[in-house]
Length: 118
Image (cartoon, rainbow, N blue to C red; front, top):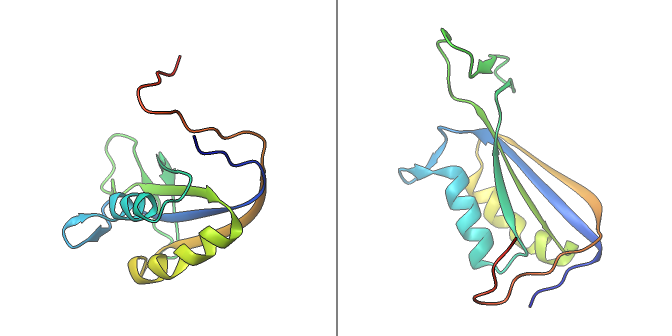
């Protein structure tokens, strides 16, 4: 069972949902690489509206021309492990925003094989 408590580093990556890496969604590539690197966890959140460096507003509302909605990938682990992963993000993210935040993990315990969540 994996445990992570106390001081940690959160990396949040903001990209567009249509951004790709070798014909695959970029958010998926980031999550799979974080998993392969043994990081504690990664989650992808799809925004309903937002804008970035282009100043174009992307929205999920009907009758809009743009549906390249914002996506945020959030990864939390120890500072050492997150910083070791940053070169992979440098390779993958050519347009987007990467933010690092100090945070405190109150409780993270991974399930053991075969254990069900409630």
